[in-house]
Image (spheres, rainbow, N blue to C red):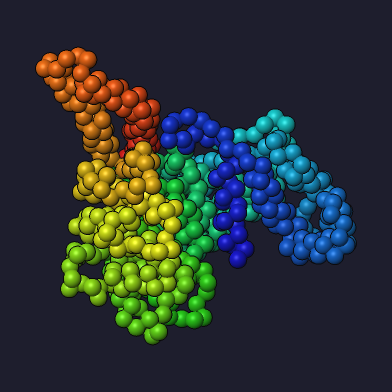
Length: 559
């Protein structure tokens, strides 16, 4: 659990505790939330524990809590007294060092604006001789807190701050053992190469799990900040195909969250990355299996399986989806015997319905999994079951489904007496957002929007959702052309009709006047509407182009 704490708290703190340019729009920004300064305190306390030994640290904590004197000065005095009473020569820490760490923690707690940023240690080695040296590649720190920064790097020197691993003559170093120091590490390219080779061997467990997690996290962060070639990161990430420790996988799952939009683009360069990740996940799940058969299995192993299965199916892994489909069918046929664990329900229902090979209207399929889930949803009236019904991705299934979810139409299959207008609107928008990027579905929505849209929701809101959930400039152009034809060209046609009519009738004829008046009113009403839509289209064009340019930094070196 302490290992998990390190990757969840310390690594997360490092991600936010910096100034760097990772913006999709190539602009520098500084993330600052006050609570991140407080989160960092835990990492500094962990450094303190390493400096004064775990025994003295927890003895001091227990006395501090028991005496109930909530001041850090008191905690500081407890530590000093504990150290003075011990004669252990292995404890190489002075009262001066304690004073400096006290100043650091106090600064973090009381003055979060005076930020102390971590450093990136650049490890460079001369491979002609057997030695190494370190130097800060960059000090991201304000002048007010320079002494605190020096302390973070200096305190690490009080410990054995590196490990040398040997692969015959190809030894390499791992700096910052077990992530006891609060900083990132960047190595020379040869050390990265040797490290990747070692991780991809059967000896990878010789590197502590916290350092395996650190290597993944540091390499990813250095890649997205353009300090490391993307090939290095992906070569290291390949080792995860044999990794079964959740702690080591955790930073990779966080990386996938960061890259999640990349998997929605259909260009070949992004699909290749998707395939690389799926290979890793499939090998992991092949080792863990999908079902939780061992009741004594560690909770972190269960979490690893669940997270891997979620990503494998979200990335359209065929084995994953077919497994979910099999589990869903078994459950629906005999719910009492084939029960679903609560944390597997959403995955089983949604991913199990993802691939359907029959049309919705086929009467012979009334006992299919989809219809069984539909009846189960109506029986229990749980809106989440209705969301599962939108999970199929085949356009031949979704298109007729969109025809049936308009609640004010006679054949609506979703009509429920307790289903509010808000429920219908949310459900419709959820379905539109989920499938708008599918070309055939987008065409259907654009040309049938008036017939499938609930009357309570405006076209403007619907188009906004559609625009925000397409990931292709071609699709955006299609939306733009459709709106141009519908509103601008359509109005021009009506205007021409009025002009033709005026040639044959008196200009004061009421019919002609009414025609022009209605057109003028419609144009006035539509101006802000069309202006906003055009603005959203332009912004989405910009976002997609910026995302593609940004993500290419992570894949341009891939072979």
